[in-house]
Structure formats: C-alpha cells, structure tokens
Image 1 (cartoon, rainbow, N blue to C red):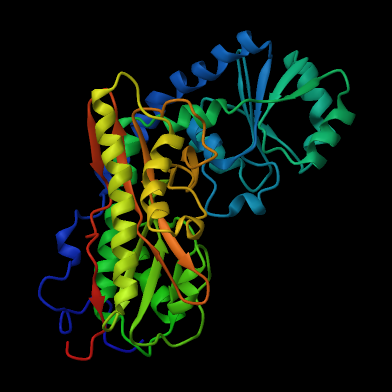
Image 2 (image 1 turned 120 degrees about the vertical axis):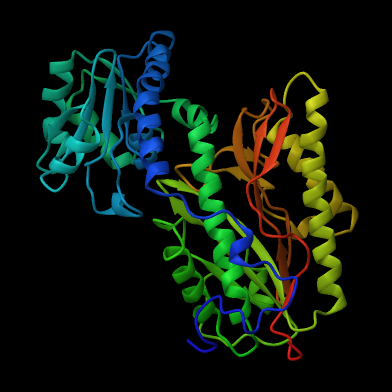
Length: 418
C-alpha cells in the first residue's frame, strides 16, 4: 500500500478530522457490562414475546434469524455464519421453555452462551425431528418467523400435519426497534470506530489509488481500530460509479476532480454502525458541490422534522420524515434521482425497523430507537451523492442525538497542493 501506514499525519492538512477526535474503542470492562445487561434483559424480552401468544392464539414461536436468536437466547453466530450453520442457532420459544437447536459444531459454544435454554442437538435434519419435538412440547399452533424459506415450511408441515404453522407478525422486529441503553452504547461504539477509521484513511486518498485499495485500507483500519468485524461489505465508489446506491469497489484508479462515495460500518459486540460520506478527490466541479448542498439540506429537513416532533404528542411516522427530506430534492427537480428511503433502523442487523421511506408504516416511530438519515441523489453515468448519519431518537426524553461524529461538511482530499 503506497503512502505509508494508514492514518499517517505527514499529509494531513490542518482542519481535517483525526482519529483522536472521536471516542476510543470500548474495553473489556464495557463488554462485560454489556454481557451482564443482556443476561438481565433476556427474561423480559422473552416474556414480551410470550405475552403475544395468548392474544394471537399461538402455542410457541419458531425463530430463524441470528439477530433474534442473540436477542432472546444469547447464542452468537458470526458474520455470514448462518449460511453454513444449518439449523444451528434457530430456536423455539414456548409458554414454558426456550429451545435452541445445535449440531455437533455448536454444542459447546451454545451451552456457554445460552445456559438457561434447553439445547436440542440435531444431526442436521430439523424436519426429521419436528413431529417428536412438537408432540413433546404439546404444540398445535405455531407462529413462524416470516423469513422462513418455503422449502422449510413445506418440510415441517409434511413432518407434523397436525401442527398449524402461521406466519408471525413482526413481533421481534418491533421489539428490537426499541433500543435499550446498552444497545445504544454499542451502536455508538461501532459508529465511533467507523469515524476513526475514515479519519485515518483520509491522507491515503488520492487520484491514482484504486477503489479496492482504499476499501481494503479502510477495512484494515476498522478491524484494527476496535471493531469485531465489518457491519457489511464496504462500498468505495468513484466518479460515475458513485451513482450506484450499492456497488462494489473496483480495481480502477480514481480520477482527479471526481467524487468518492464511501458506505461502510463497523460491528462491535454484535451491534452495527452504518455511515456514508461523499468526498471530493481534487477540486470538485460546481455541479457536484451544488448537489452535495442539496443532499445536505434534505438531510437537515428530516432532522428538523424529528426535532419538531418534540412539540407533538406522538412521534411522526417514518413516512412523514421521509417526505420532509424528499420534498427538498423534489423541489430541485431531482426527485426521480432519489429512489431509496431516507433511513432504516440498525442494531443487531444492519437494516431493521423502523423504516423511513415512502412505503414505511404510518404508525408513529418507535422510541427510543436508532436509525440512519441518508438522502441521496444519483445521476447515472455522472455521479452520486449521499450523506448518511445515525441518530438516537427518544421522543419522551426530547432527545435527537447524532451517533455518527464524522463531519458532514464537504471535504476535499487528494489535492495536488497538499
């Protein structure tokens, strides 16, 4: 990697953010405290789920997603591990029992992570044991995670025809959207790791470096800067490629006078961050600065709408906040260039409730919660601009706290005179 170590100060102009401007990574004491908070919170989380059974006429809930398993039971699957874990980490919550499924690879791990749960050891075939399990637990009507693959649904139905499977409402999504204090701490910790990583990368950004080189350097800064891993694969996109809201870095040199859109996040103790900054590599053209200002004003409009809600009896809907940001971009005649939503919730998953979009629920936003605010403008073949920050929103406490600390102002990097 050219340019010396990541974050070297020899080419860092005065006024640029530095890693030292942001909070340090969490320590072992923080992680012990968070683990204890989770253990203390799990019984109440499970009881909230069970309270829904009687109203819905259900005997139990079958959970499939790693984020729900961690939230309710404590078992931890690594990033992307659900693709190879089979049924391990899936779980059943009945009125009396929490059952966690595991094969031989996960038995010792899950016994340590979920000591209060009953561990059911499978040989890889949940359907083959399904009738025995449901009969033993006395289950006849079962709410199933709505993400259940149709193939698994059919196999379970065929294995135990007397057990009615019903798609569950978004019970756990709604519960996880309301964040506990230590959950917010971890998201903030992940955001600070990301802030420091991007600040460390700034001196390395220059025309001639490739998107892939910079993405790898940023990943290194995240992983060595206190994160347990990436929240998702890094998007580092320059020039016309930045018009892809989600894209992959290429082995293509970055040209002077173009934008560099960087979308990335860190994972700390299971919780994610997500931020996007659009940087200017060399002197930016006027149209890029104009569109950056437009996106910044749209983001400000969404934040202003959230702050105004503190004078109202209930929070606004995600649809209402999206409309505030979208109106600014539409007024500039670029509404069709903003196709995605204004924001999404974040926590144990990178994308979760609440949603801030044209298709979001008209119900009030949950509170307290954490979500992104990320309007953008994308012109195919030319450039894309997005600014994304995480905020902690608490309507009752009248708090709107930015968790992303990296400056929002336009930032020019890689200029020849620096």
